[in-house]
Image (cartoon, rainbow, N blue to C red; front, side, top):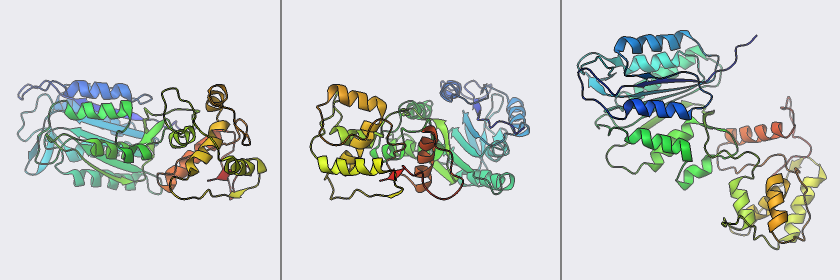
Length: 367
């Protein structure tokens, strides 16, 4: 029997040191991030010695994953020694001891996870950023040849900056609790899936960063796939872009102000009802209401939004597509792989089997 895919968290937080200045938030930052990663295995280490860190990471390497995701976070002191970054455990003195960043990322990459996100929140953590990502990528190429994989390294500051205790960890948790704030990230961050990929999270954190105290760095390699809990996930709802376009705005009462465009909606409803496979395109100049027309049809197909429209909105004269008439909808402000993934998930949820050959389900119209 094939081993079940697992997702794992590797957390090391060091707030108390025997020979170095204590940190107030390092250990708690790791514990609080762990609490957000629902479905992940692995309990973090708080204030471990160097020997305990090494034993823990070696156990991660030996307990090989069968795919899945791995999120690793080190939060604590780090020092560059001869151009090499060393992560400091409780009994280290900031001189030549500690865990080399190469070893930390190598143990994580050797876990067998297909999606690996390594996060380092420490002073000078941008040191060897290129090397760290290259180490993970090379190990994945050896272990996962021919399989889809991704690696990302997110650090709290550059190679010449110190990190403010608790700042980076708090910003990262806020992102994973509430989603992105910048418009360009909102477009890429779908509310249609329960998980979001690591590349999207890393990019959104950088785009929203507004502190001059330090500047995070992020690098990635490979094919990013959903791996982190998505706080914006809204099952059984209409894509937000189409929903707001169809309503005519985002009113406090969630009321729809859609009027007119009867012929246009009738045409799209006719496509949906026809059962004829093929590609149909709604075209028009900017602001002419393309999204509103398509969103109206999708909204009336969605059972929850349909009930709201029928109970609170004005009666409509255009054709009714009927409940559950649209099996899948996406706002294609993302790459082709993500669009295909979102469509596939929705179609399977609607009862379609995963395709084994060419062709499109006969009642699937693409806009």
